[in-house]
Amino acid sequence: MSKKTDEELITRVLTDPKLSAVKAMLEKDHAIDCLFLLHMDKGRWQQAKAFMNKHGLTLSDGTFRARMIEIEHLGLATSTQIDPLKKHYHKSPKGEKITKLLLELFQKIQ
Figure 1: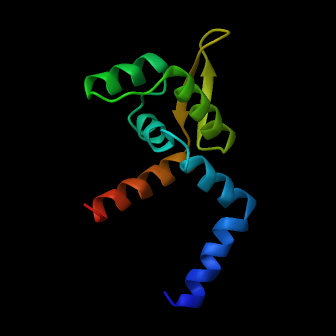
Figure 2: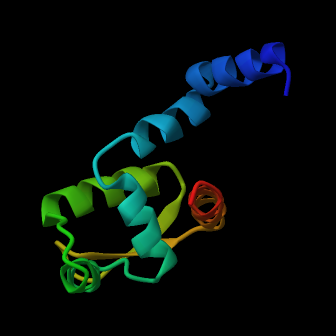
C-alpha cells in the first residue's frame, strides 16, 4: 500500500465509530484471549477458567465477564442466559471473522 492509502486506512480505523470501538476493545486486558476462548466454544466461565488454568494462564471472572459483555455489545458474540447471574457466550459470524484474522496475523509473525 502507498503511504497515502495507509494514512487513510489508519484515519478511518481511528475515527469510524464501529472500527474505533473494535480497536478500543481489542486494546483491553484479555480481549484477544476471550475471542480465542469463544472460537474454541469456551464461552462459559467454568470452561474458560479450566482452559486457562490447564495452560498456566490467569483470567479473573470479572475480566472475563467484562470482556464478554463488550464483545457481545459489539456484535462479536451472542449469549444465552443460564440463570439470573450466568450467561453462556457464543461466537457470532463477525466475531469468528475477526478471530480468524487475528489467528492469521499471529501465524504470519511467528
